[in-house]
Length: 151
Image 1: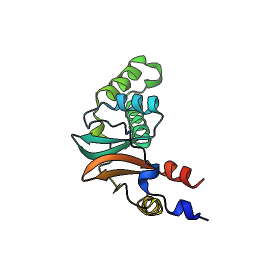
Image 2: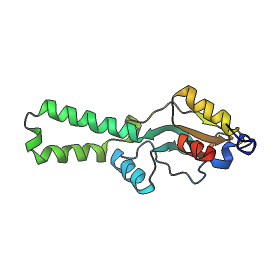
Image 3: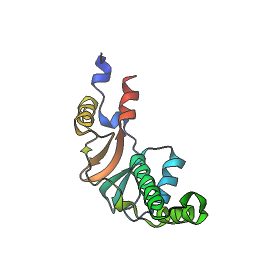
Image 4: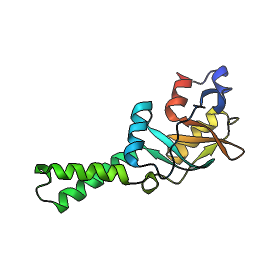
């Protein structure tokens, strides 16, 4: 049951306002470092003031799995070769995040009721919303932020 005080919460009340971002040209290895350092599961991808996508930990796991599968299929003794590990690391260091990010971005405004944002997340099958005001990124909201507000 949602309490009276919780039902009045807005996105602005629980969003993260100091948002770490990356550009679309940031190497995926650097993105992984930023996520780990800041203990986040997703980052908005921005070019200038505009959010052009979101990169998530799932995107990075998918890339690592695909790279591993490609190396295993192309090199029969992959497990025995340190050069293959080096090749995988170089791929992470060189591949820009624009190649793996999700370009479909769901946005809300800071004044959106938190319950509406929660419904939006559940209907769009996402875990993060970009918070924009006048077309500019002002925050980031995750399903974990919403859950924390209701607990």
